[in-house]
Image (cartoon, rainbow, N blue to C red; front, side, top):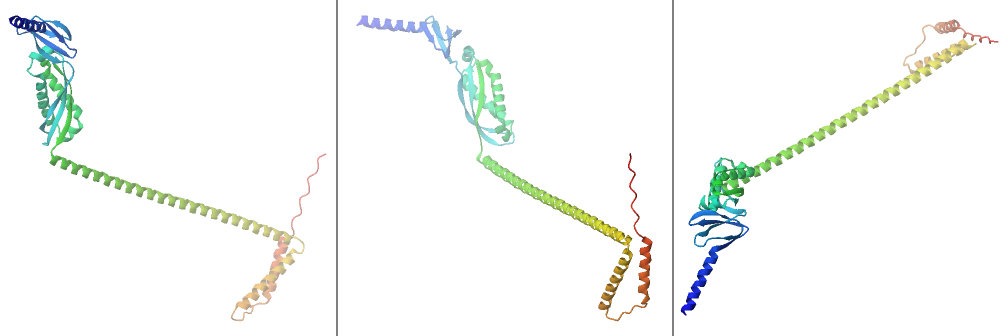
Length: 317
């Protein structure tokens, strides 16, 4: 029994020494080694030998990028609007020794620093800028955290604002403002439509007036050209008739025919006057007819016959 007990104790001691002698570091971590309580180096991924009792693995650090939630907190903007803001911190350990001895808990420290920096940066912005300039806010928070976290052996990769929640009163005010803005845009759209319609109607009326005036102008031009053509035709016809009369007078017996025609026309017109008159009209001098006829005969004799045609030109041999 005593032998079994001694063997068990020896086995446990041997197992303990072996476990303290050899250590395996995984690919996603680094191990900080201490010797007699002092920093003795950083063990990278792989198989390592340690001196039992003297050496120990003091800290193990995750070397992959870590994502930490930043709890929501109350912030006040530059225009005195209270809101709840939370975010996400992405960081990575690049120096396991500093992460072990530079600060007690780098994760909690990074979250607390992100909260205070976020509250400070939001206080510099108005409510509208908080929504529209998220990228700038994220960059400024990362820059501020990097200044303090360099001594901790960690690197701030990025920071993202996850949600920005104003108070219920502010949300109601914003909704009313948005509704008023929509109504304003609707009124502007309606007024612009009415303005465009009035412009289109006035342009149509102007085009109609121009077309009517052009039509009236063309109509008057056509009528004037028609009247001018008519006048030319009448003048040509009258000239032709006068020429024919003149030629007829120049012929033998033409003057007698003209006199006879004038006498007949005079008698016809005199008969019309006597029929239309309500009183009896008697010519004062009956001999006036004879005198008129003699005057017409003298006029015909003065005109005389037409001149003979010119002789033809002599033919050349």
